[in-house]
Amino acid sequence: MTNPNPSKRIDWRIALLGGHKQRVTGAPADTVVVTPIGGADVDLTDAELPAETTLTKVSLLGGVKLRVPADTDVEVKGFHLLGGRRVQPAAPSPSAPVVRVRAYGIVGGVEVSRA
Image (tube, rainbow, N blue to C red; front, side, top):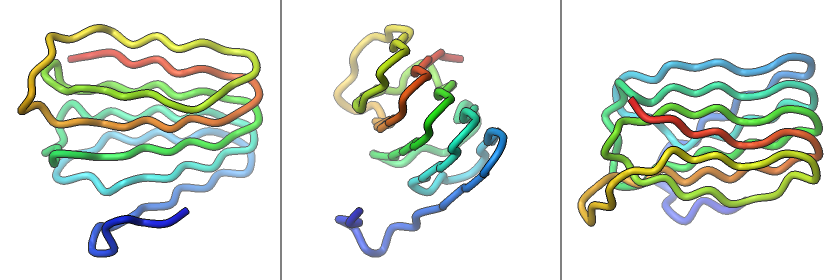
């Protein structure tokens, strides 16, 4: 994976057995979560979101639960053989921060809720 903005920080979170849970305050880095067996639960409701933030999740078994502020745009891409996507809708705003979720796995899905 290439970072298009080399000055931007990327945090890696790796768990061989089990998931990843994180509540972010302050300015979040782009995050890559690798969990062969386990999901990711990330809460960005108290984060100081920049214009764009990316969360990438790679797993065999496990999905992503993401909680964002009400005024945040969320873009979800990726694939799961078994699992769905559920994104709580929000009113579009051209000035809203964007959180990009990239989720790849065999079993699991993506669920986005808003504060």
